[in-house]
Structure formats: C-alpha cells, structure tokens
Length: 157
Image 1 (cartoon, helix red, strand yellow):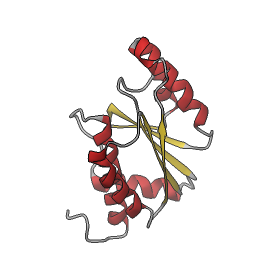
Image 2: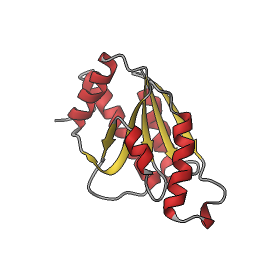
Image 3: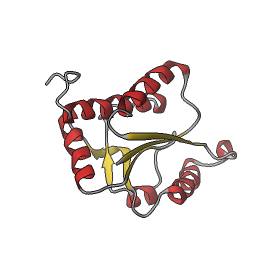
Image 4: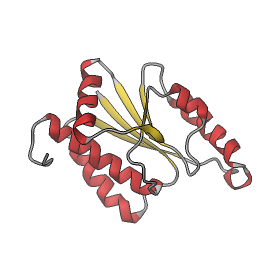
C-alpha cells in the first residue's frame, strides 16, 4: 500500500520542514510514501472563501483516482486513538487498498464536494492547528501507527 500526504498550500515552513522530513523518512521503512503540495489558486486573494474552496476542490478531485481511498482531515470528522489509527491502516492494507490519501485542506477547509468523495473524515483533535503544523502531526501519527503495527518501542501505551 502506498500512503500519500496531500496538503493545499505552500511548501513546508522551516519550523516544520525537518520534522516532516524525519517522520516521512521513517514511514518509508513501512510503506511507500509520497507528499504532494497542491498550490493555492493564483487568484485566491480575490475569491470569497466558498469560491476558493470550490476551486481547490476541482483541482484536488481531478487528481484522485477512482480506486484511491481518501481520508480528508476535517475538524468535524471522527477522532481516533493512535491504536485506532494503526488498526485503520492495517484494515486498509488487508482490504487491498493500493493508495490511501490523507488530505489537508486549505486555509478555509475543504469544499463539500471533497467531503462527499472522501471515504473517511478524520479529525486529529477538537483543537484547531495551523495547517503547517498539521502536516507534522499527521506524519508523526502515521509513523507512530506503523510502529504500533510492528510492536516496536516508539509508542508507550
């Protein structure tokens, strides 16, 4: 199974870059991993939030294959424990999922069309985090889930 982390926005800020790279490299020991940064539309500053989300959604949806399993990070999604995330990844792998995409939306979130396409809506927390920081948290949590699956010492339950 391949894991893809997609994020709407600019390149990783310096304060998260090294952490994202570190955990991404570690995940690579368990699953193939790819990052895709989806640029904000050029006219974003002139668009209302609803219009911006719609334009971002069009771009996102055009890149998703029919067989991809989409996990949209959404503040109103379901929450999981670290063990629950590990079980989720194992279930997807056992189900023969070829690529699972974890999608971080733009500054105003994700359009409803993306929510409808998503197979799972996942909330990292009831707290709101900066989108750059969500990238680091996502990478660390997926790495943690991988170590749980292999019964390694990183996670202390």
